[in-house]
Length: 130
Length: 194
Image 1 (cartoon, chains in turn green, brown):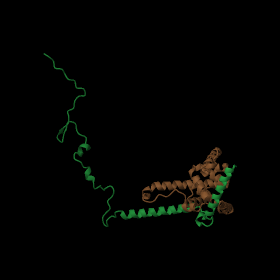
Image 2 (spheres, chains in turn orange, blue):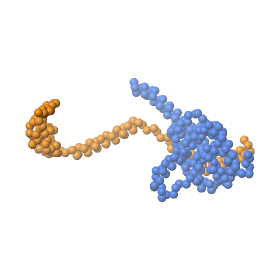
Image 3 (cartoon, one colour):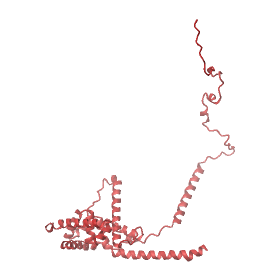
Image 4 (cartoon, chains in turn blue, yellow):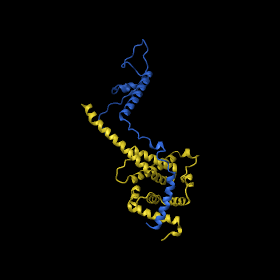
């Protein structure tokens, strides 16, 4: 160590003495040394989560039950087979029967004439010159 | 049978383990108390001599150690390990504060920006020599400042300082030499030798 190093060391030592005098006490700060936390039991955590989930599920079920439409007393409950949606009429479009049935060839349907049946490879005869 | 096994084997082992843990913590607490003032000095340097921040960093570090979030593996001395934890904790807090400022920038727009200057109260109680030293240290690079502090203030060897800072010995030595030269130049320009 050189003389200059010793000088620096002395300066740092003086600084250390001054800072040490200002240091907060180790035991004077209760917050800094609270007892270490006990590790949380995973079983207790799981139970708490399960309880919360059960409460949430029960709440949801009760909410759904309160909003469900109740059948009127005295009125028979319609079976699923008989039920028709209220927007069913929208599917009844004009000309729907054309899509449901197979058209007969050559028949007139709704003012439309089916095209005549041609042979598969019609040969056009050339006119004979005199 | 299962209950018998539990009472005969599992419970005594758990008790012994807990007792060992408590004893270890008591020892650790004693060691931390012994090194408290030195740790505070190091925390002050890591926080640019802002006292409140240094106290917060030190408190967080102690909690980390006592709650076994930071575990001493015995690869180095307890002191160098603790100083490393303090340094990392200070860096974490600095990053967190910076992020908070970035996120809540709009809300902070009207408020005064927190100062990064050293604590004026603390500076007022310092002697002239110490103030000059602190000012000179503030000009150095962070690494040079840290190495010089660890060697001159904390009386560690350069090797131990390198361990704390997670540096190679050669790198630490270079920082030490360059820092020392600059510090001399600033503190006493007439004494500078080539």
